[in-house]
Amino acid sequence: MTLHKIIEIIENNHEIYELLKYCPYEILRHLEMCVHPKGSVVFNQGEVYDYLYILVDGLVDIYKLAENTRDFRHEMNRLRTRRVF
Image 1 (cartoon, rainbow, N blue to C red):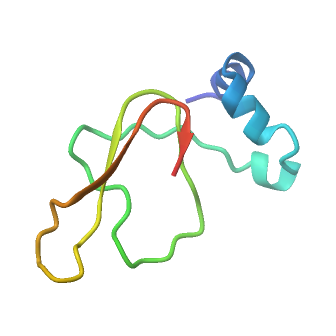
Image 2 (cartoon, rainbow, N blue to C red):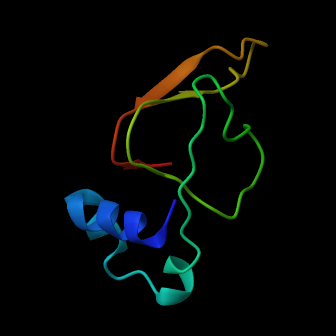
């Protein structure tokens, strides 16, 4: 996705604009648009990442491995549009 599309999304979404308005250029210049197919895994529990996602459109289901079971389908939360994860 082009830089112009990213700027358009930021300017047209108040929550995203507020989140990024004081963000240093050194961080902003690394912004990328990603599209993940339904059902894909974005992060794995227990791993450390050096980036974050801003959900522009869609839903994200977050699952956590319960402490006393091997059930990976324990739903923890559902995020909707314009959230950070």
